[in-house]
Image 1 (spheres, rainbow, N blue to C red):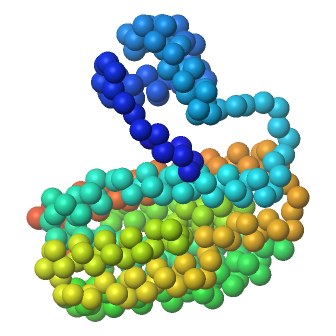
Image 2 (tube, rainbow, N blue to C red; image 1 turned 30 degrees about the vertical axis):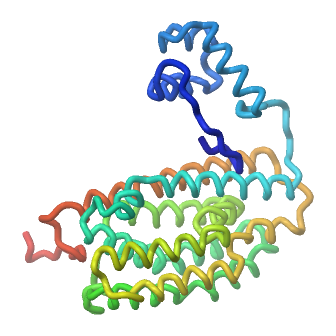
Length: 308
């Protein structure tokens, strides 16, 4: 179980994991210990023991009156939470399925294809953030970010061509719905709240700690599925460029001129981040669903009038 930067190993003395997970979902601040015991069928004393164990390990929310959060504390907490959510995203069955060779080779190619669409959308959501920026001091940060990201889709295009997909088919491909949802969510966050958008970069930008492992995994998976050796190197180069540019640290940079973040802004940013995390889950669900279906067009085609 991952919470922030902490990892907890769950042992089993009695019962099963399903019962524990069912119980854990009721630790939402809306149920008493007695109610949880009644709903789950776990003895009340056992529920109290579980709650006490979580409390002693700082795993329960500590809520209280709060008007603001120190800016550096907010940036650090967001970074740690994004590290946790990034790992949870990495546990999706898409990644384990391609790592173990349990999914069609087209699913791996589909991951690269939909990442191409997603990376290609960067100028769109960054430009939206610039156009709706609610703090003039942040405009230079967003503008520099735009100039560094606007043409990175070419790395993914080159990767797909290396994998054997004709260039014209990549450029004319239509994103799956999960990809549209991800892009549109990022644009909506960029439109409505600049702080939230910058916080989200902590989640979707590459991390130094994961870069080498991700690169090795991509190389291994590509060759195991029979794609040419070295075909994913452009994608890895893109990841390295993002790491070297320090885009994961945009939030901390944006908060250098501020002493605090209001509680309202902090809550809104974290909620948008959490929504984005689940949008990634849906994005990966859709990749597995679409590219696993042997009857689907790959790459996905646009439908014109004459298809009716």
